[in-house]
Length: 319
Length: 173
Image (tube, rainbow over all chains, first blue to last red; front, side):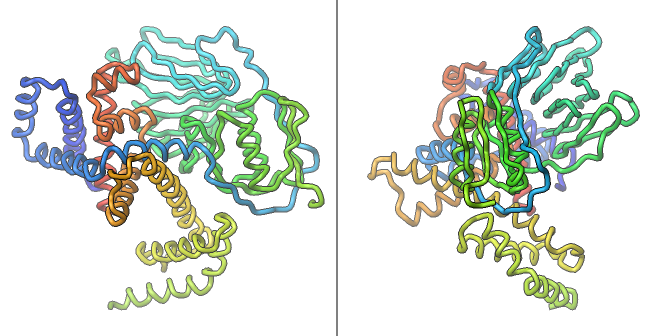
């Protein structure tokens, strides 16, 4: 984008002015101050015109239709968009299984159960969203703001700190240093993954051998020894915030492994269909519905031995 | 038409002949519907033509499927918005229904607004919709969502900045 830093700054300031004046509680002093800002610089006036253009675009639709339509679209995206498939020959032999266990970190400062998602506001104004089965310890002191991600997945939105303490997330494989930003950290047994949504972070493996800067729109995998090269985020990153998993041509086994994080008990996949490619959006707040959709959309057989033991296999008469 | 334009056109033409059938099949498998697949196949090649990069493509199929995937996501987004729009319309008293012609315009405007809002966090989006389309004041929004007035103010500023940058980006595209 060909905007100068001054223009970007003016747009940000114009947005703040716009928000203030729209509030319904703006004072005459606010309006005078806004006017002073506006006449101070032609770049300010240009930025303000852009705000007006946005507001005109919003005003171009009747609110009584736009509000429910935009909200409804948001809701339905969390639900199923559809499933489609491509069959690829199987490679592995044994049944693949995942079993979620309740987190052992019962004493952690912040915790979520399997299938739960919760947001916390931290003392410095930063916010922390915990995905399913996650535990985090908070270690703030005079020198740094440190989160220990014991297990699971978090989305962090950092706030500026008056004391300018650095913000770090520590996992068992390495450390993530936030550079004023919004990002996701997922810690698993074998390694971790960081996805950056705004600004940038620095990821360092525990060995300290490599430090990689990850920019907005990028993700990176790391383990205790090394940090991989950043790759581009795909559409599915962070969809759990809105309560869904988005799959684009993902092997069925991966999708089921992901779904199993959100439900208690055992979920198993027939190796003959593990490599089946699946696309769609699957609700994580109701994984039974996600399984039902796979069952009907892909004509798979989902056998429920109990609420806590489910097998997914190829339909009978087809191998 | 310049010489580069000509060679670009013939490159796209060649791409079309060689991979059109394959791409159509690829999309059909994913969409389960021949009409949408044909549309998206067409749109993919239009994108290629517009991008003017046909001469530099080394691996045509991964390249084409990447573009097609983006269009596929757009289509799914659009479908969910259309459905929500029809639901919203059904809940509106008949006297308030826009004419069919107006409806098409409103829907197109909504698609563009939806695109501007893409990428905003769910909370910020919620606040923005309540303010811009439900016409609530900030104190009302704060009370409705159980958040502070300051947060409402910050979310609104964030949303406006985001929409503005998206609008500029789309004008440049």
